Length: 458
Image 1 (tube, rainbow, N blue to C red):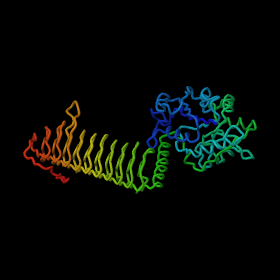
Image 2: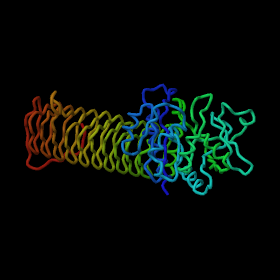
Image 3: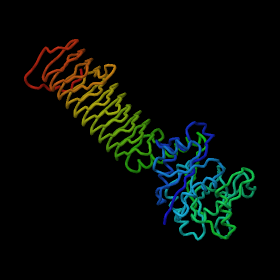
Image 4: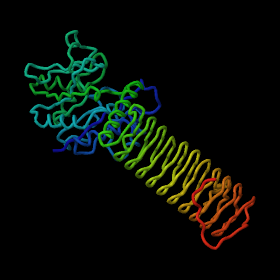
């Protein structure tokens, strides 16, 4: 059986007061329409169809090949929106699932239940409903004596008696495809709004004696639709609670989940502890047994096992195992810290590799550099990698000791076992096992055997 989803995403979203199309507003690091696409994948078999309208070009560009798109040029209601997919899907699918792109909290399990309900329904429609005291403007579900659905009555036309009904229309539907295309052309135009409502298909089926079934959801939070920035914040908070709970159930400790922000794509290993005010964004991956935070911001980075990241910012960085950084360290794109690297406060690394055991105590900048194992970077060290036009590399060997306040003017190579005196300005390559001092630095001592740096930061 072929099952295709239609996502409605054509609305202008004027109450968002934004130049960005509503369905592209991010929630937990992904646009709300991304969340809707993830949900429908579990209950359908075919590539989804997204009905676009306002901001169609931007939405279509974002979707790329993840969905087919059809354009609703005139905003004439939900029934009219679904009708735009008829030419694309008629004769090509058995069931049609219809839902809104601005309901990102809807769980895939409920759509699967909806599809299963329709598979066992001899009638043409099954719908999602919820029972709640707060109607939130949803249409009321009117049932027949046999329990099937007779009609969906919109709140603005409901009688006083109908307004007391607590079962509400969520906005999720599963149709027999062949029946749907015919029914859409028989929907009357609403006299008050001048639009064609998809909910009127329920009345058409009921009048024809065809049963309409309902799958009742038990979580009102899933039904939150986004029409304003207030709704957006409600959904963001709910999604964050859901994400945090899943990580905690998988073995992650959060000292204060309410102040821990994790995007939906983040992966975290067990026995990792997240301290308050931790932000994990993008495609971040964190291994096991780490201590992250407090006050850490990490984006699109990968952290190994048993690392400590205190009050620091990481963007596109890679940490191997047993790395210790912070507070107030910054790792920019391309920063790679090997096993057992220590990086102290107010250090910055970009496009550089610090090999195993490197110590970079504090107040230093390392850019476009390769630093060998067990070398020590003294306080105030700077790799001068940019001459105003191009960037150049610095290569530092193993067991090197860079004295405090050293300026390393790239391109530059410093041999293993070498040392620089405090305040040196190094403009020429330094041989192995050589001490250089001064401005510009010059060699004053050389020893035959390689000397260990001892990782002492003076």
